[in-house]
Length: 320
Image (tube, rainbow, N blue to C red; front, side, top):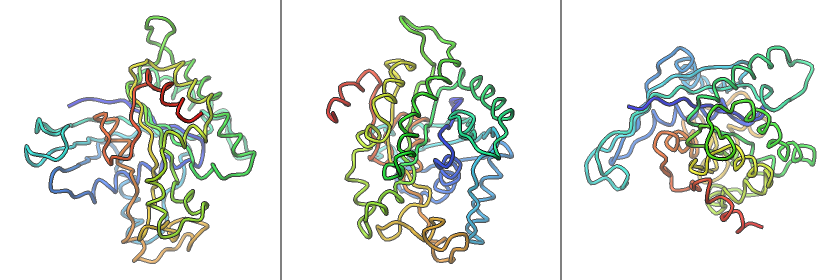
């Protein structure tokens, strides 16, 4: 069993907490004859999220509020083949992949300099310092961004375009490991979640073929258009060439009959009160991918753009 220290960061409202909750739920619902996924909570914070998921299923009340403090999650995550002739080549050894995951969620303002009357800047400074200390020891990193902001107003698009500047600042303060040349962070695997892809598809006018349309979009190319060259320069500056990268679309609320599950999108469908049949039909979309990738480096759904950082420049040339 491996012991992994991982972080999840991203701007406010990028879907970080919802991603974690949907992942814990999706593991409990996962069923394949070739292999199984299991998760066991190891601390009260993880148990609290699982309880909120159950409350959602019972009541139809959306419980996924954003994070307002630094929260540590601790759970065991295992991936195990059920027989030696698994369709997945990476399971042919028939040995389970088991990780104890120490995962930290943080408010967006602790990294991305967000402003507002209700923000406690002193508290955010403390969270920021604590997050930097954890980043020094992190082996896995999940970055969440809002894919729907691709269609946002100009000021929000510019906000995404400046993400790299905030990351440069926090990464520069977390350097501990010195490699040949410039010092690099010790993160071994980094996953970029393009969250709320269902909302993006809705904005694009897709209806019953929304899920199919997502599968037709290259997530790496989409990330390049959304975040710009500066973001990818930041990755090349602060991470080792051998760092493994994953890019994929995710949605905590998923799709319904191939179209956006609008009844689970607050402000789009029924808002805070949802009919039971729509809760029962809840199927999070590709939320297992980030966690399987951090644990094993594998492309779980087949829809992840996987590469090493040393190969990134060549791949980006295809999009220019």
